[in-house]
Length: 191
Image 1 (cartoon, rainbow, N blue to C red):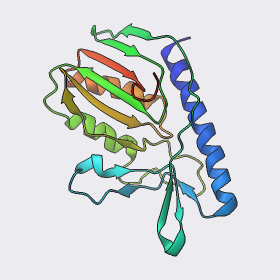
Image 2 (tube, helix red, strand yellow; image 1 turned 180 degrees about the vertical axis):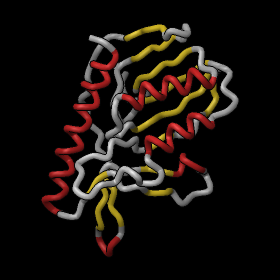
Image 3 (tube, rainbow, N blue to C red; image 1 turned 90 degrees about the vertical axis):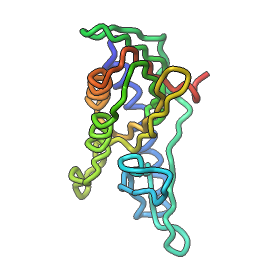
Image 4 (spheres, rainbow, N blue to C red; image 1 turned 45 degrees about the horizontal axis):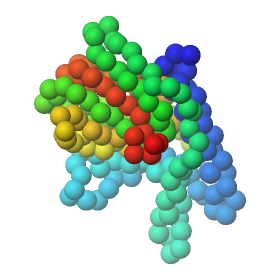
């Protein structure tokens, strides 16, 4: 099994859960929909870090938006997968939840512009991929602001319905930004 097989298996498990949850919500609220672009109204976040695509959203009581996040208990289990890129960057992949993709990066990254451009593209910050009736938009649902702690950068991504290419591009962006080591997993969710 290769790295893309691992990513594909986990993506399929997540989308199955999202599809089932959306169908269940639509039994009670036919207008429930998924992957609507929302901007968080808070000074705490800026730029692309303010954007989020809730798994499911619908109008609740008094027209207030109700958000449902899909968190599944199952994940595709595998042993730690380690590889080296052509440039010698170490990449370690531990079991993960598609919607809880935590990233740890060691390296002298001083400019996050390329990462933010990646996030804006995959979140689809302009809603360019929206098509009426399309099941999934193939978008990331959100990214957290990278924070430096204990000699490494940490952030997480809800990969949403994004294609596997999003991860390939993420690794490429991180390496071009100065990453020497990359580790991914759902460290806070999977013991």
